[in-house]
Image 1 (cartoon, helix red, strand yellow):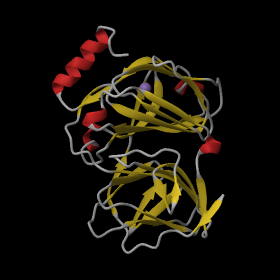
Image 2 (cartoon, rainbow, N blue to C red):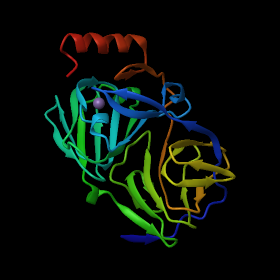
Image 3 (cartoon, helix red, strand yellow):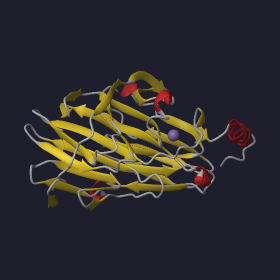
Length: 288
Ligand code: MN
């Protein structure tokens, strides 16, 4: 693993708002916490949704997500622990396992299923929805499984370990890059008494979600199971965080599209008319 010096920042972003997720269920009854909900889609453009799931009770996850459609965006599933089988109408199939990522571009449409391949034990992870620019919403579907060993990692001279799922951080390029929205997706592991910095373009909307421990950004502590939305001050060049206990969090940032956002369940388009077309295409068997 590469050792790097964390970026030295001129000024860190601060925490603008703390968010507590909403307990809900989706698919065939999978219990999850919706952290990024519809009312934050404009503020956190280009991100549309973040679900956190984590349970050691099979009843909370065993039914999975049977066949369902998507159009107009990308789904990025990061599995911290557990095994989930993906199958879709574009002919892709894959097994998502401990520490791996599945990146699916729904584009003009896919019908897929996500079904657990375990009957007990812990299943824990995240599903993020990343919007597509208007010009790419009807593109061909795309899919990639990224095994844990293929996700670039680095450790800072302070001993902070960072997994770079997308974008680049402290000079280390991630597993996936995307034009236009330029998403950054990091999984950051801090041990007690350490701090960490990474550069962020001032234009990007950004947030963190802490899943173990707690982290301090500016004067604000973000506790476990909380999202902290990072401020967009023009003179900030990144984010610095520190902690007094072992802490794990994800940091997600992207360049806003500033286009219309109309969502109807699993379809996210720019206009009501395009949503009507998606529903008609799905009902008529033309979506995928
Ligand atoms: Mn899905």
